[in-house]
Length: 208
Ligand SMILES: Nc1ncnc2c1ncn2[C@@H]1O[C@H](COP(=O)(O)OP(=O)(O)OP(=O)(O)O)[C@@H](O)[C@H]1O
Image (cartoon, rainbow, N blue to C red; front, side, top):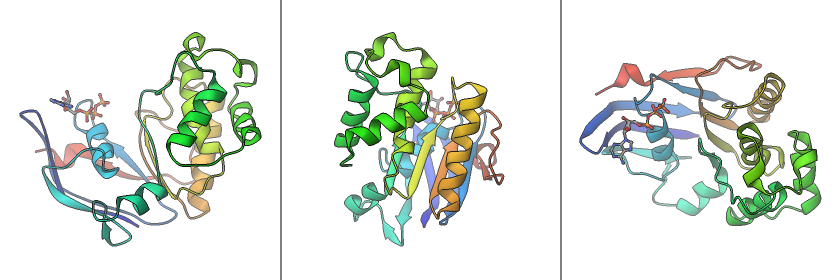
């Protein structure tokens, strides 16, 4: 279970939100909504422990995330809104690198299957610099198809630059993850065909 209690966030000299509470239980999906610049990305980074809130606390299974970072990070998969790829490496090399950096031991065959599943069969051996925006996005998203048992997926605009079929496939994957007891927190400006509509947290309602 992920809890956030009474979070406040200031960026530079700009107050963004305060009094923000949330909880995400196993099986749940939460969509963080709000206009541009209201702090969606900032909130996701705070929830992952990548940035500190001005005040408030985040707990994972009742333990503050800064007290046992290792356990929390083993349960967490965070994908930011920009695909962090090395342009000189192929999609396969990038995927294997991000798994290794995240401490996931994944066989090459499983990585290849994930890249094929996400529609990159023809691009396996190309350097990432020649990929389209949608293909770059897919390399990052391939981590969701690896079957690693990370319970909490935090995804910043995962549908950006994907075509209709890829949006449907990803929405089904996120729904399946929740149906299997996983948790998803995401931002998106577009509707996606989830099996169940996610709960919505609108940052406009907690704007400072
Ligand atoms: N380090 C920083 N210093 C100053 N301002 C910042 C900093 N980081 C973010 N901001 C500002 O904080 C605000 C919130 O940014 P954030 O990226 O969290 O918004 P968002 O809701 O995700 O926006 P979008 O819908 O456009 O992706 C923006 O006005 C942004 O310019």
